[in-house]
Every structure is written in C-alpha cells, then in structure tokens.
Image (cartoon, rainbow over all chains, first blue to last red; front, side, top):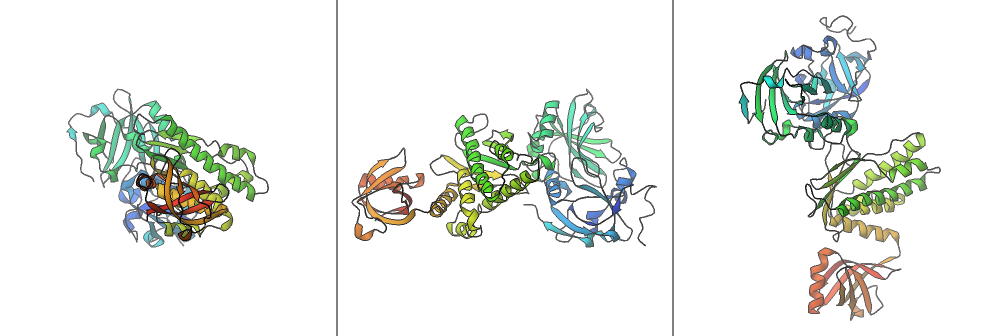
Length: 126
Length: 381
C-alpha cells in the first residue's frame, strides 16, 4: 500500500486532494531526461522554511503546457526545458492550488516513487 | 548564481525588510511581489536566481499606476523592471537581506531576466500582436497613418476570415463577429509601432465554436510564414484544404506588407502565432507569394510572358505601358499594348528600360477583367 513520507505534517495532503490521474508539466533544468534534482520539494531541499508546511512537502506542476511555457519565459532561472509526465494513482495525490496561474497544481508524491522516471523533456527554449 | 556587475552597497536599510506586500507570482514561494521600502514607497521584486542558501531578487522602484499596468497586461514583466534604479538583493532562506548591489538592467544577463514578450500572468499574453518595422516609426514618433494602417490591416484580414467562418456555419453569431471586427487592443508600444489584441470572449457555445474555427484558420495562415522561398511556400499552401485556401491566403495577404508600402516587415506574435512567444516575419516577398496565389485562386487570370518596350511609366501608381510587342515571342497576349503593374523592388529595372528604350521580357499574371498584368519578373532582353 502506497504511503506518504512520515515527515508530512498532520492533515497533509490537504482535504480535497485526490489520487493523481492527469498529464502534468513542470519546468526543469535537465534534458532530454530530467534528473531527480528537478523534482525535489522545498521540504527535501530544506528551503522556503517560512512557507506553508504542507505545500513545502508537495511539488508544483501545471496541468497545461501553456502555463509551463509562460513560467519558463517569465522565470528563466527555473530551467530551460518543459517536462511532461502522466501521473496515476500510484504516484500520489494532487490538488488544484491555482492562484494567478490557472492550472497550478500541487502533487504530493508517495514514498519511493522515482519522479524523474515519469517525466520526459518535451521542448527546448527557443 | 550569475555574476553581478554593479556597486555593492554597505547600507541597504532604505530597502526595508522586503516583506512581500502583494505576491504577484507564487510558485513554491513568492517569485514576483511588491514590497514597501523604509519610506513606505512601493518596490517591485522579481526573483532572478537561487542557490541552496540564497534567493536573488531584482528590485526596482515601482508605483501604483505601473502595478495596474502590469496586472492589466499593458506592460510586460521586463518593461516593469526597466526602471531608473535597479538593485540586486540576495535574501537568505530566513528572508534576511544578505547583500545588495546597485546595478543597471542592461548589466544583467538576459537569461536571468524575463523574455521580452512575457506578461505577468499567462492569461495576459496577447492573442495576436503586430509590430511594424518602418523607417519613420521610432520611439516617441509614430506617424498616425502607420497606426491607422496597421489597425486597418487587422480589420480587413479578420473580416475575410470572419466571412468565411460565417459561410461554413449555418447560424453565425452576429455579436462575436461585431466584436471580432473591432478587436480590443490590449497594449501599444512605440519603439517601432506595435499593437496587441485580445480576442472577444465567447458568451455561448455557438460563439465559442465560431471563434475556435476563426483561430484555426489564423493558425493555418501563420503556418505559411516560414520561408520566403516560393517553392516552400507553395508546398505549405497545398497542405491547406481547397475550400479554406483562398480566404486564408487573402486574409494573410491583408496583413503582409507589399514592397510599395515602405514598411520593411511586420512581425506577428501572440498566442495564436506562437505559444512560446516567438514571432514570425511578414515580408514583401511573402506578400508577393500570397498575391500570386490569391490571384490564381480567384480565377479569371492567365499566365503571361510578353516581350516589348516600356513606353509610359506612372511611378505613383506603379504602372507602365508595354508596347511594340513581339507577338511571335509572347504568350497569352494578343493586343499591341499591355498595362503592367509592378512592385517597388522592380522599379530600377523598369525605369532603366523606360529611359534607355531597350526591349524587356515581362512575365506575370494577367487579370482578364482588368487586363492589367501583375508583373512577376521584368528582365532586359
């Protein structure tokens, strides 16, 4: 049975998160095969300690290519490539956490999932 | 982390604590936000780099009006950062300021700045934009005829496509057509002359269907703008269905600059043209290819090759009369005089032949109804 890491705070993932079942996009630094370093949460890198503890345990992804494209061009330091992956229920849970980015989604990954194996880079900066 | 070219400041208390006041772009933390400086004046902060311990922000003085423009998509993210004073601030993970430099936007590597077309949020990216490259258009000086002409191009082009979509739908929605023919301008830029448009928002399924079809025709048209070579162009044209070919080409022709218009080129961009923000360039060569195709598709035209002498020339209308025609060497011509319409880039050859009186071979397409030969090539014999 899949489970979340034991260091997730209580009540995390948030209520409303559902088993993952969608195509998602994320800006990454490595191509053609993204690396594990492209898919680390703030909790794993010990950064953004002021952020929400549950969101720090999740990975930000987009449901649309357009949103990822926009982010790549708006914040170039995040990476030159866009990785696409198809998530399924074995990979964790997701919740639409959109603010100004319409399809921003948080993905809480089950323990042991090799995230980089789910994704492939699909587009270079042009 | 990128190298900083600027003056490192010892006292940067004037920036305040850089606490986000309004987070404008959040992605695993605030990436773009406003803050108040020590005198409660507005600042804009944009994250440009990071390491394991540091988040590096570009900080600029800002104002409420600039903030409104940024949030409305009237200015790009890069334009928002282009302010008289620019600082780079390194923040530690506990959000304390570690170092600050006074610098200049031009000293920051472009791969650490937003791309020039990017708006703050994805939904603000214009659907369609035109930038006119014209000798008389520069920052602070754009003749009104360029502005008017550019808007007219778009309206004419949209009209052709809207009419075609209307023909294909049994019940065309009139409101969306009216709005399409008066598209809302999102922003103007005056470095050359640029105008960006949004598409009207469909209010029902029928309007949505109309707009989808309209945009799909635009996309097909823009897919032709890849190469100035006629062979490549014709190959791409053949990929468009025969029913849609003429309106798509005619609409694109309205946007392209002819060689007589003094517009060197027109850059088209926007989400319909290229999702990644790149632009395509409409040139007089593309216009010429489009014109030939449109004329051929409209019918009532014939290919003509004719040899004669240029006897009269109207430089204002780009017309000349070809006379003393060698009937035995000409194809498709029976009269002894042909009115020919030429392009600006052919003018030198035309005027030389006119002044020297030598024979020329002219080829092109003749309109049967007007009997005017649209000159494709003019060569000395």
